[in-house]
Length: 289
Ligand SMILES: CC(C)(COP(=O)(O)OP(=O)(O)OC[C@H]1O[C@@H](n2cnc3c(N)ncnc32)[C@H](O)[C@@H]1OP(=O)(O)O)[C@@H](O)C(=O)NCCC(=O)NCCS
Image (cartoon, rainbow, N blue to C red):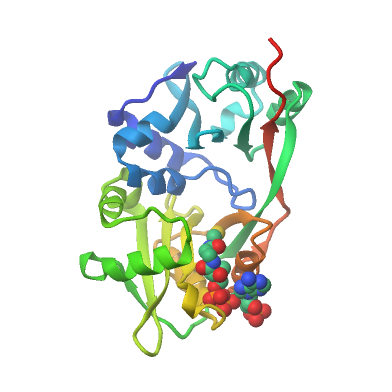
């Protein structure tokens, strides 16, 4: 059953999601994604969440990451539950706006079970490919050349400057930073900024650990525009892996649009293994009824 989560249930949803078995090779919706979206405030995050429960148990969580994109994950025990998945598909494919708006929409659903086939059977199609990349943390992470510091209020300006330089259309601000760090997922996260030999802030990353011993996510990662092509991307991805290893994670993972060849090359250079591509689903045809 689809329920409307309030601000007070954010921590409960995140704690419950942390307990779900997580396959980094698929890079499905992770607590880190909820954590990153907490930058818009608890109210906005709650409004962007779609939550399904069965007998008071959390069965599925969707995050409306863009107005027409829902990123969905389902509790392992419900992925192959035909009845539950059929009801879920009915909610996803409805155009009453409770889950997704009417018309053209995209869905990220990186898990097994009948969901894809049911949606494909209703006219949905596969969309652009994404590439998950995974670094096993069971062995020591190599050294690199950057001096890496945790972002604290004194280093916030450096972090923001690198972030804004790395992402053209960034809307990340100090206020968003503070909101992000107040979210429940940030209790197991770290933000890093990397400095080069001239002491310039050149690279940044935030890492999110899931459950203890589980995989941790990089979101976001970037290098300042004027400092690219000098190995700083590789270095900050190694620093991210080392930070997640310190936090007890089994793997560091990330996913990027396969078209972002620079990012894929950078993660690979840092020892992240490229995994088979995963695809979102898209409903493109306007509804005829
Ligand atoms: C992707 C990004 C982090 C790369 O940073 P960088 O400091 O230039 O990367 P590095 O110098 O460490 O390069 C690492 C490797 O990737 C390769 N690479 C980097 N950018 C590349 C590009 N645009 N096209 C092809 N290869 C590229 C380098 O040649 C190098 O390969 P090598 O080790 O085989 O020589 C940077 O371009 C960036 O911040 N982009 C915008 C933000 C972004 O896309 N983040 C990832 C989102 S998931």
